[in-house]
Length: 137
Image (cartoon, rainbow, N blue to C red; front, top):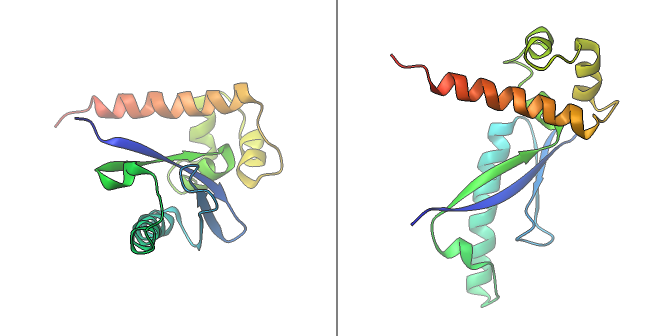
């Protein structure tokens, strides 16, 4: 039996990140700081939400009764922000074929990429991940 996935949508704020989940209407988490802090807050907040729902005998999505895995979905600005200390603009340009100036505009939210450009970034990072998974020691 496979673990069910729960989609968490991540957005960048001026001072950190925020997250929402379509399965939990009205549920939002925001943190000042980095993505690791957001992940921790999301997990704790979901556990608290479910505990309160159970105590109040309110309905909640049954996926939370079993094992589930949180899957994070980023917009391009948030994705570039999370990994800005790992990937230089030069490295991203090399991976994606998108010039550094344009990537900078995306990263700071001045310009939203067209779907084609966003998919180019996502594909390049997925391809890199696939290559990294092939490395053995």
